[in-house]
Image (cartoon, rainbow, N blue to C red; front, side, top):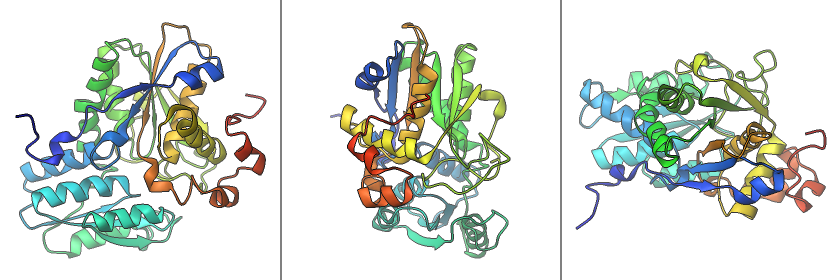
Length: 335
């Protein structure tokens, strides 16, 4: 018989899918591949660090039987932690900013987590920010433990041990460029380090929303795309591993998200569209021998009321009615 002992063993080994129609439409000669992380049980790449952070905490005695996991999250890490908590017998509390979609909040509750919602746009030091509230709850609740995905080295370790090796194996060592969004920086740091160890010539490209600190430290402001970018440098941020950071605005992110569904059948979230825009820009002008792998973090099911709702997109996403009638027009003419 062939089976897993529990659902956590199903995390990882997500497929690579060629973005053939986008390659052709954009005149790209390189091979453009998407690593579809929504195939993970919790629907996102964050299942990987969620499981790893709990495993490491258990071994270190930081998380004991009957304990409570408390984490500040935009939703995806929370889903992975909630799944792991259910399997391993812990309670789970997820603290989220109020800009996260209703789908994510409802999903976490359905997975058995308690959800605490805090205002968006507060600095991490503000006692009402989702970072500070999570810290306080973990400290006050008996048996509380905050994995701390932003500074926990088990986050990039998960990607060093799984995501990077998978990309290397799946491309038979031919990957030349790896593109991923930057938030906690676990994915790009861990996978990027592994790939550069295999071949120092691999280019690691960060995708960053307009308004985030990584692409423009002097112009940090709010933006609509969820779960990516930051207004501070996380502990897992390693600028030495990133060769280039490409800034993408909300409009481009959301239109590409829709395009991935319409042209490639990939039903993914807004940060996936953002990463795909960066990948297209990185791939332009590369030879046929180049292999560009872009990591698509999560599923579009978390954003039906936002990215896939015309009214929301027109009001919050920076798009025009013309954009919605011509979804292929992601890039401005000067691009």
